[in-house]
Length: 196
Length: 196
Image 1 (cartoon, rainbow over the protein chains, first blue to last red):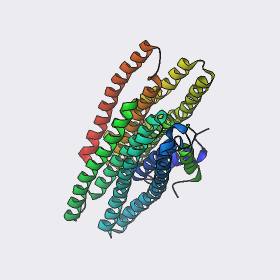
Image 2 (image 1 turned 90 degrees about the horizontal axis):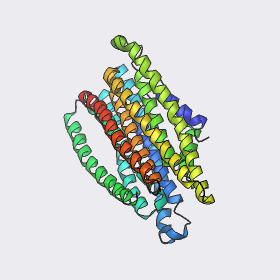
Image 3 (image 1 turned 120 degrees about the vertical axis):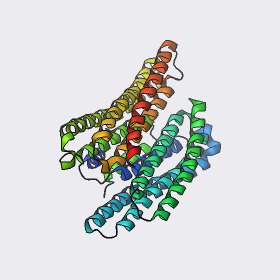
Image 4 (image 1 turned 135 degrees about the vertical axis):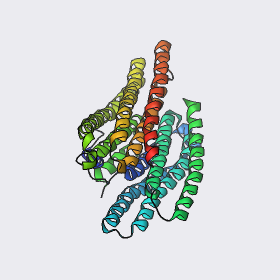
């Protein structure tokens, strides 16, 4: 069985009436899944005669995917903690603005990590085993969904913020990030389409 | 800790040099995550005075999300089994065409399940707790990514098929499904945008 008890429990935790883990943690988890799939493509390339000339590149890319996974898993936890602080601040009616900023910056970090991963995935798709090209595509789709999910979580946290300068700086940054993400995503999918 | 050992093991299994679980199973898992998040929005609506008039609807929607999750988890396993059969058929040089058809129809079933879920999510976003509107959006993004991921897996399996009639029937069906998916997805996101 692929779906083990722990994975079922994670899904139960998401589904439960507790607001954490919620969409922000799910965004980071989608990033972790994307990283893992990128790593698989590297693993299915390394050691293959046909791909001997990219062996060293693939080992470096595997390392980057593995590091990305670890970072995303930290962000799963950080997002839940940041949300808990927002709830606490609203209850105490104290420190709401600071709590909201942390809860906006955590998914922003997730989104940044998605962009880095997509840059890695361009190279994975380009150099990796072409029998696994659909897996590289799925990894990119998951990273893209993780990015957009993280953006929704930034937006819900800055929505009612009083610091309008901060809010508009965040909005500008999101516009730039979205463009960089879409470029990297399109680059992966162009390679995927060539082989499908 | 939100990320338990079993979930880490699932990610290790994806990342490993074994081709299963691969992109097809990940697509179905993304569907299961989307379903769980939809269920959370229902759970965060049920029992709230403000949403008393949609209580019965939300209970039905919760049930649908829960059933969708179970179905997606089955598809995680089925996709890996179908892929194993393709590998076996190629090794034996026997029954390749039939194995490819099963390996194409399994992600097609995942994609169909994504469409059903998106129809449910339209209602969840519409009637559910507006404090969780970003979660409804993340659920839709995950379902959309799961759909596109499943499509890549259909395409890689029909790519070299000899039965061209079958292939073109599948391609037509994919076009129709994509349209229905995008419509349902847009309907969710329109509601999400209104509240963000």
